Length: 156
Image (cartoon, rainbow, N blue to C red; front, side, top):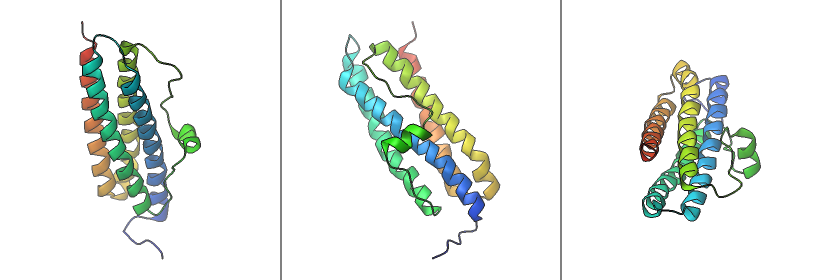
């Protein structure tokens, strides 16, 4: 059945493509954060272990919201490591970095998701896609807050 939600097919496709990149970034950061949760060591272990758990749990919930918005726009949501690898601007970690490097990588990842979300916003605004704009605003607010909280751990 044809979709008729007041957004053209062309605009829905552009927004869904952007959201697919956001989904890939979010899933990649989820995986990285969960990995760091498992493998963090050092004097800040308990603080970081708990912080990372809260962040990866939130990211796990976010991937569902983003994927469901892509589906509501009428497009399939990417759902494989191969697809995420092609779409994500966040790189996976191959080893086990120090706790401080984990924090730095997660700051960068949180900031990247904010940038990815921000890059989609003009297409959503142009199309009058308030649900996507709302989702993007919530994602940016959360990721910018997380980046700030992680950066605060690096203050000397």
